[in-house]
Length: 117
Image (cartoon, rainbow, N blue to C red; front, top):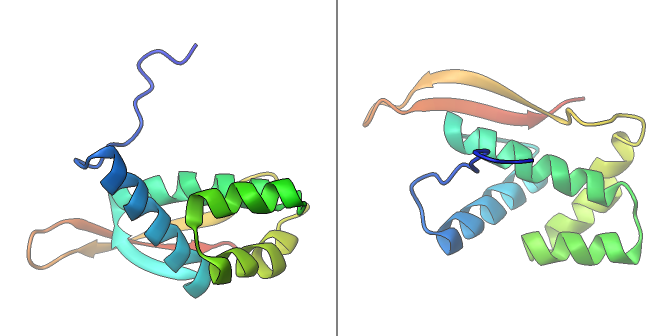
């Protein structure tokens, strides 16, 4: 049972949150490394790792499932052709989060999220 297992809401509405996660996922997939707040990095990690696991199947259904979430053909192509083949033998743990300090303006905890080599 998954009682009391809350998803990270990030203080946003559901549509804003899904757009934010999709955009951060696209940025991570295309640039291989992004800097964001620690909380957002933890949420993006969940999102991207599920996408990579789906992309490892590399069939039409997997492509459509990924397109449903990220809605960017360039990022989808990079995910299927460059990223998912690297992790065929690996079961999860495709990303790494490294804390980098605090933002000057509001002292938010910053982190870099990147793909594990």
